[in-house]
Every structure is written in structure tokens, then in C-alpha cells.
Image (cartoon, rainbow, N blue to C red; front, side, top):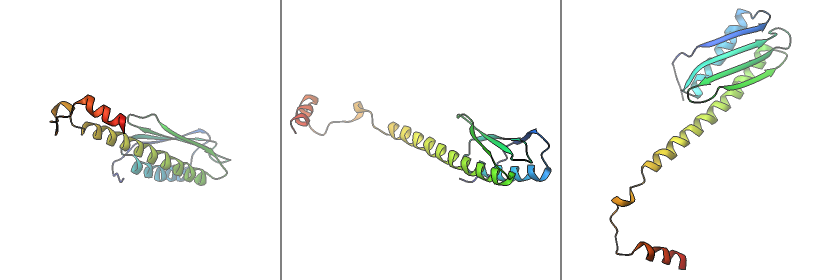
Length: 136
């Protein structure tokens, strides 16, 4: 689940100026999200009113999936970012598990032998086998 690759993190403020400290904090926290899905391509952080009851939206773009989005408003910027990162961690974990199950299920379907390549152990016909299953 660990990844060392760099993913671009874009931070923008829609209303007001975002301090360097706030920007660094958001970047540091969002870098954690890459660990939870190795198909992450980009992360966007959009902040509305960074100093008074900031509303923060984080979008995590993942290959072959729509963006994962979390939005929240709160009193303190750091608390809002922490909460959003936690929410996105859960979303990314769930999506990765779902993707892995899909791949596993697809691989197991490929492992099923071709019915034409199986040699029968007995001379029982298909119709006999169906009748035997219906009778039991």
C-alpha cells in the first residue's frame, strides 16, 4: 500500500490569500493519500475563505475512475483538512479493494478450464447427469 512516487498537488484559494504555512500543511497531509491508491494521478485542493470558517474541497484524480471528492467547512483550516484526508482515505481504500476484487474475480474466471478440453471420467451423458440432479 506504500508508494514513493510524486503526484502533483495543486492548491488554490478562491477567496482570500492562503498562507505558505497553510499550503504546506495541506500538501503534507494530501501526500498521504497516494499511499492508498497507486493509480492516483493528481490531487487538487480548493479553499474558499481560508481564514474565517474555511470551506475546503479536495479532489483526488485516479486512473480509470472518476475523481474522489470530499468537501467540508469548519472553524480551523487544519481540522478541516485532517477530516477531509480521513474521508478520502476511506474512499480510496474502498475503491482499491473493489478494484482488486474485480481483478481477482476476472482472473478466477480465466482459470476455469474450457469444457471441451476436459476429458470425461465416465461415460455418463449430459442428459443422464441432468436427470440425476433433478431426481435428487
